Every structure is written in C-alpha cells, then in structure tokens.
Image 1 (cartoon, helix red, strand yellow):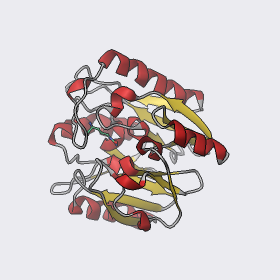
Image 2 (tube, helix red, strand yellow):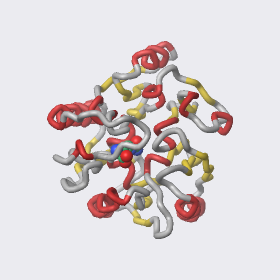
Image 3 (cartoon, helix red, strand yellow):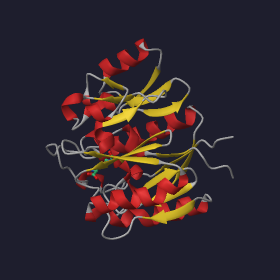
Image 4 (cartoon, protein in one colour):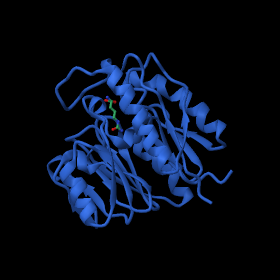
Length: 258
Ligand SMILES: NC(=O)NCCC[C@H](N)C(=O)O
C-alpha cells in the first residue's frame, strides 16, 4: 500500500522576517499564522495523512515552508540546496527526518541550487523550474538523480513568480492548472486548464477527488467543484504574505513501503 505520510514544520517565532521577492512586504501576524498552520495540519490529518513534524528550526524564518528543502521521487529524498542563503540551514533537520523514515538520501551540491517549490511531479514526469532559486547546475543534478530511476525531467523557465509551483500545479488526472499572467510558458504543458486566480493555481492532492486549496481563490474553488472535485479550503493568509501557498507547507511521502 502506498504511504500517506506528510512532513510539516512548525512556524518559527521569526516567521515575520521571512523573505519576500515578488510582492510588497506586509505585516505578518505570527500568532494567527500558528493557528492557520495548525488548521492546515488538521486538514491533512482529517483526510487520512499521518503528519510528521520535522524538528523546528526557530532561527530560520522561512522554515515552515518545508516543501522547499527536499524533493521526493519514489523512496529517494533529494535534499535541496536553497538558492536563498538564509534558507540553507533548514535542510539538516529535514535530512534527519527523511533518513529516519527509511528514505534513500541524495543531495544537491555546490554549485547547484534547487528548491522543492520548483519541482512539480506528474506521474513520472518531473517538471523543474529554472528561476530565481534553482540554477542550471541544480536542474542537471536533479536529472542525474532521478532519470536513472525512471523520471523524465522537463525544465521550465520561471521569471514572474518565486517558484514553478507558485505558477502551476496539477489536478489528480494530471491536468496542469495555472493563472496565465503568472506563467512564462503555458505551451509547455500538453493538457492545461487556466484558473481565474493566482492562488487557484495551487492544489495539494489529498486523495480521491479532494483538493486542498487556499481560501483566497474562491472562484477557482467553484470551478473545481463544478468539474466534480471537492475543494477543502484553508485560510493561509499569513503565509501568502510571504509568498507561501498550500503546497509549500508540507511534503507528501507517497511511496514509502516500509
Ligand atoms: N514552495 C514555496 O512556495 N515556498 C514559499 C517560500 C516563501 C519564502 N518566503 C521564500 O521566499 O523562500
């Protein structure tokens, strides 16, 4: 049976100092962020995911965005090397967590940089965003790590948003969804559905027809409901102020057969 485990990481007390790159800085309410994070974790649990808390990294403001620190393919955990210097110290705790779960561990090395938010897996196709946080050496190392395992790695330019998955994710049937004004190359994706809101581009597949998505994309939630999906909506306003989205708050481990 495929596993349904998800890594999460409690927000740092320094969350409000997190990086912002493509948006204006807004004041973050850290207490509200903790409440929102707890509700997010509860939504995963309610839908059958066993959540595993990586040891907190209180000195790293962006550590709650755990997705950026590791990329899973089958049972291999590729430890990221964040393009943002202030995020480099986040990976140690994540490496410990995935090793403890029995994953094989591999690493992105200097001069490569890669953040998990730049990697979108659809079946055995692994799209990787080449943008502000992931460089060409990081893309090459991702290919070298995953292609021998059966992945087809497709690189995509990213210039308008932080990460590839800030622009696109995918529905359970593999249809890529994205908000066109934020995309560099919509034509890269063979089956593509445009969505009316930027935050509507981000879904976490909870299983079956259930899609975890942000409260800030009500029109897209309606569109998905009309297509027979079941949106599960969480408010993540405090993380959105730091360019976070629903995908970046967890890493799902679906292929651990231990
Ligand atoms: N995968 C993601 O979308 N991660 C969001 C990271 C936000 C954080 N403030 C950063 O700039 O690194």
